[in-house]
Image (tube, rainbow, N blue to C red; front, side, top):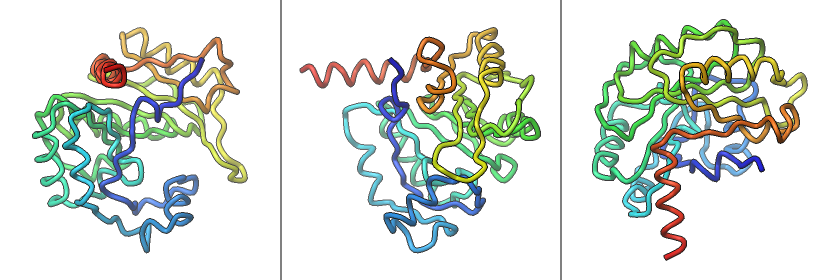
Length: 230
């Protein structure tokens, strides 16, 4: 049975807000609906949430579920990564759509840096990520997909996530099975795990869903299970 990615990776929204303004942005809609901040277009930092990293029970955390890493201020990054260094029990994921706007280096083995690619025109973001962010681990999210991404350079990429646009936006993008398989086959040829998000279930069918995680993420989930059983 297909699982929800949120059951494997939890959002830790230390920063809320993004300046990019994508028409399909679910985060902006949720922030407005629940009045999380006054203006989503102005990223806001919530340092009081840093304490959530101090929990001993390990988690796989996505820190950019409602922001873009490129929009973070340097002082925010310094404080957040210092706290991460003191909490190696977790895995931390980051995403950006503007890797060209970031210059950052990190040697933490539990930090994963990624880009979002939504069309064949954006494939260059992957190389820009490798050039602008020096890290130990890289990943790519293909969601939503507006066309066939085609052949991609997955050098040094350790995980890819594939999805489709959600919500009821008029004219929303719908991923096609052949696009999904094209990326999956390329990743598997290189031994890279692939996670098809649960939103692809109606498109791919239960029997075709591939939901793989990096070994480091699986280890976190295994430890979580021992905590629940103890």
